[in-house]
Length: 303
Length: 267
Ligand SMILES: Cc1cc2nc3c(=O)[nH]c(=O)nc-3n(C[C@H](O)[C@H](O)[C@H](O)COP(=O)(O)OP(=O)(O)OC[C@H]3O[C@@H](n4cnc5c(N)ncnc54)[C@H](O)[C@@H]3O)c2cc1C
Ligand SMILES: Cc1cc2nc3c(=O)[nH]c(=O)nc-3n(C[C@H](O)[C@H](O)[C@H](O)COP(=O)(O)O)c2cc1C
Ligand code: FES
Image 1 (cartoon, each protein chain N blue to C red):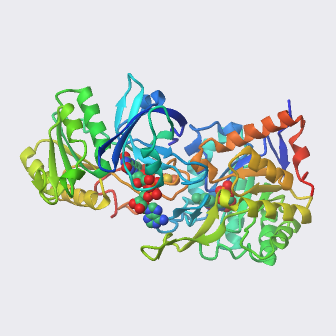
Image 2 (cartoon, rainbow over the protein chains, first blue to last red):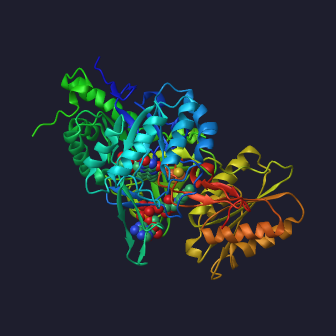
Image 3 (cartoon, rainbow over the protein chains, first blue to last red):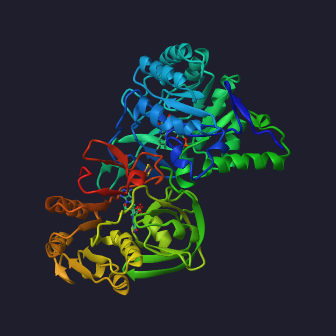
C-alpha cells in the first residue's frame, strides 16, 4: 500500500486531487458521475455575498487545446449556498472547500464568518483573481491589498485558508509571499489567463464579454512554471497546482514542480470522471515506480 | 439534480446518409438505451487529442431497448459532425449521457392530442417522443408538423410514416407540402382540434421556436420547447449555457432544461 495522502493547512486529503472551482458546480451535479468521497477535496464554485447573474452569453468559446470563459461568477449567493447546497455536501466524507469572492475586504470577511459558523466547510479558497468581472483583479495584482485581505480573513476564521493566485500579474511570487505572510495556510495557482478570440467573418469578438480566462491544456506549461517559481521562492507553504491537468502524468509534473495537491478543472467537461481518474493514475504511478509516499514527489524535480 | 454523466466508448453499428449532409449514426449502447427518454441528449467526442476540444450535444433519435441500440441524426457543420460522418460500422464512438434535466413531459389529459412541431435536427427528438407515446398507447393522437426551406431538407417523413404518423410538411418555397412556415400549419391544426386538450412540443431553430411559442401563448395552448444553446459541459457545472426566464431567473439550459414551457423563456 502506498501513501497518497497529503496535508494542506489543517486538512488531510486522502489523495492530492481536488476539483477546480467553477468546473465542478456544487458537487451535487457530479455526484452520479463519480464518487465524491474518492476525491482529495471538493472545491465548489465561487460564492459571493449576494446572488450574481454573471455575464451575457456566449460565455465560453473553444480555442486551441483549451477554452476561454467569461462566466462572470454567476452564483446564488451565500444564503443559497448554506441553505441549499451545503446540506448535501455534509453527507459526504470529503473535505469541502468553498471558494469566496467579493468586492471588498468586508465581503470576504462576512463570507468567511458565515461559512465558519455554518459547519461542514473545511477550508476556504480565496478568489482574489477572477479576470472576468469588474474589480475582480484588484487584490491579486497588488501584494499590499492581498496582505490586507488575508490578514483580515485570518482574524475572521480558523478554517484553512488557501489564497488563489492570478497568473495575470508581473510578479506572482510577491503576491504569494504577501498572502503567506498574512497567514494564508496554502496558495493555489493558477487561475485562468486573460485572453480573447475573434470571429473573422463577423469581425466580432466571440465572447460577449470580449475577454475571458483561458484554461485547459493550452495553459499547462505556464501554470507549471509558475508553480515551480513560487515553490522555489516559498518552499514552506503548500501549493495547490492547477492549469490544464487532464491526466495523472500532468498531475505528477505539478507535484514534482512543488505542488502538494493539484486541481482538475476544465478536463471534467470532457471526461466527467477526470478528477478520480487522475487520483487513481497517481496511485498506479507510485506503485509502478515503487514510491511509498506521494510526498516524496513534491518538489522533487531536478535540473 | 445530479445527471447521469457516464462516459461510454461504444461500437458504431451503422452510419447512413439520409439527405445531403445529414446522417443517422446508430451505435450499441445498452446502458444509454435503457435510460434514454425523449428530450435527452448525448455529449459526443470524436476528438483526436484536443481538437476539437469540447464535446458537442446531440439529441437521441431512435432507441431500441431490446437490441441495446440508440441513434443520433446529425447535420454536418463542423469538426465533431465531420468526425461523426467518418465513423464506420465497428469504429468506436465516445459518448457521455444521457444528459438533460427537464425533458419532454407528455400531456396526460384524457384524449389529449400531441402536436409535434420540428425543424432541422430538432425533428429527431420529437420522432422519439411520438414513438414512445405510441408504444405506450397505440391510440394516442399525434399530429406532426415538419418545416424546412426546401423539400430536399425535410427530415424523417418516411421514418414517421413507418410508425403510422402522417406528418404535415411545410416548405418555405412550396416545393413539398404546404407553402409557408410551421406556424401556418400549426394554426390550421389547432383550429381543427378546436377546444379538445392539446399540447404542442417544439424543437428546431431558435426563430422557429420563438414563433411557435408566441402562437401557443396567443391561442393559450400549452407548449414545451427544447431550447438549443451552446453547452460546453452539458452536466450543469460550467454555467455557460444559461437561459433567461421571464420570472427573472437565469438558469442552465442543460440541467434546468433543455425543455422549457412557452412563456417561461424570455426571448
Ligand atoms: C440539446 C442539443 C441537442 C442537439 N441535437 C442535435 C442533433 O440531434 N443533431 C445535430 O446535428 N445537432 C444537434 N445539436 C447541435 C450541435 O450540438 C451543434 O451543431 C454542434 O456545435 C456541432 O458540432 P461541430 O463540432 O460539428 O460543429 P462546430 O464546430 O461546433 O460548429 C457549429 C456551428 O458553429 C459555427 N462555428 C464553428 N466555429 C465557429 C467560430 N469560430 N466562430 C463562429 N462560428 C463558428 C459553424 O459554422 C457551425 O455552424 C444540438 C444542440 C443542443 C444544445
Ligand atoms: C468555466 C470555468 C469557470 C470557472 N470559475 C471559477 C470560479 O468561479 N472561481 C475560481 O476561483 N476559479 C474559476 N475557474 C478557474 C479554475 O478553477 C482553474 O483555476 C482554471 O480553469 C485552470 O485550471 P484548468 O485548466 O484545469 O481548468 C473557472 C474555470 C472555468 C473553465
Ligand atoms: S453546459 Fe455547462 S452548465 Fe450547462
